[in-house]
Length: 460
Image 1 (cartoon, rainbow, N blue to C red):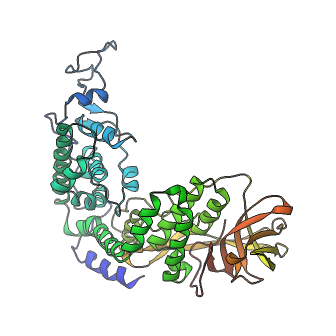
Image 2: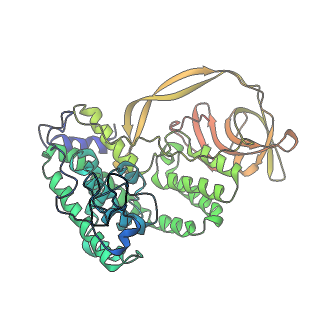
Image 3: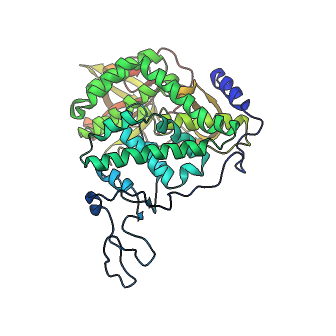
């Protein structure tokens, strides 16, 4: 295990003699999601999200009436739906509570680098008022970092961008900051060991990421500027990714580098937005269909806590983010993913024709259980146990054309994974990955002189 991780986990384990085990040691029972006295904002804007109460026969009643179940218009909403921020804010403040929540989904899409106080406040509101953040210490600990980034001045300034009344803005700010206090009150009930694992370890991952973001501030600033024009972004994104590749030196490091992975994900989206489906497919191959979330802060928190749990199996399981969610999807029936061993490369006028050896049975290895963890805390990743099996030889690969620059380091005998399309006479493709033996040596057009493994497995 990585030395940095091991050192931090020793500190966590030393925080108390009893960690937060399966029985929930150090936790508390769930608190009520809302006070008995109504806390709902009742401004005129709320009538656009309220449901008018009805009697037992379904007849609508006045707004301030209670329905057959004793609920007034503002007592219980459905959920905070995916919508404009203004709509989400009103759905959060115009009710005392809501019947359904999806805190986990909101947590996954809350950005730590481009921190948005309004989005963070909605995360805290949904988590606390649903009862998640007052009963589930692991979710509460993950949300705590976002909550502690909120304060009156920052949240008030962000709320001024919302196209709602000043009264509604004030209600949103006050309610969110009160929910931060409620969250902190729950976290204060945890044992020191439980807090170190559930709260401090995620915070350490966030702090390490903040240092990483600062060290790469120029690249991130350039990236954000490029993303303002997605229709023209692909060439610039490719340049940034190549620059990052030159810095991280080999595929194993790049495959877990947060900046490399973020740029790669945006590259897939940029190609897709420009209707460059072949390019998008190849970029997705380079990124790897497995471990799609590797490099996100949520996956880092999960991996760091999972690494600690491997040493201390008595503690609760982390929030199940894993590295596998949210894979970029590029689907086109006309595009084929090809994997084959190069027989010859014939270059002419900036392009090269690749021919392939007759396919033979080959060994495919898939990840199974977690074996270990590696990498510094800001980009911890999983090393998986392997289940390997022989694959059939498959059909003969029809030759195709690629850009010569993309195969300038490729020799006969190398194994190429590419996105390919077109009939035999005009068949062309774009390189996704290149292997020498089982070693990954190239991601897309990015070439490496050294390699220390194959974290993406190289399989389509």
